[in-house]
Length: 116
Image (cartoon, rainbow, N blue to C red; front, side, top):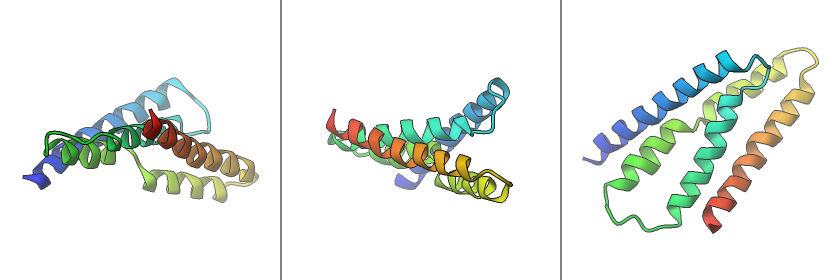
C-alpha cells in the first residue's frame, strides 16, 4: 500500500513540476530556470514544515512527503542546469549565483518551515 501511495503522490508532484516548468518557460524568457528554483525552495519549506508535525494518518507521509514533495522537488534537474551553466562560455557567474540561490534558498526555507 505504501508503494502505491508514493507512486500516486510522486506522479502528482512531478506533474505539477512539469506544468510549472512549462508555464515559467512561456512566461519568463530568461536564462535562469525559475521553475526549478520555485519547486525546490517551496518543496524544502513544505518538507521541513510537515516534518515538524507528527502526521496522524500513517498513509499521509508516504503520499505527501515522500511521494508528492519528492516528485515536486528535483535535485537531478538542478544538477543538470548547473552543468549547462558550466559548459557555456562566460557563465561562471550565473553558475555561482544559481548555486547560491538554490542551496541557500532551500536551506533557509527548511529552517523557516521547521521553526514555524
